[in-house]
Image (cartoon, rainbow, N blue to C red; front, side):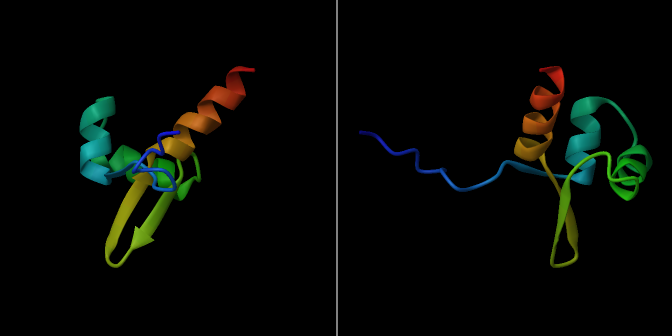
Length: 63
């Protein structure tokens, strides 16, 4: 049995990296965070988007 070395970790992106990947401005991403439309976590002074949690949420909405 092979155990994934990243098991238990989340794929996180900075606001700017997430905005670039989805093709919107950082201001748009910040407004989505403020409106609780996308999951994020504050780590120190940085706010990171929890991409795994967002993906899971989107997949469960499709059902």
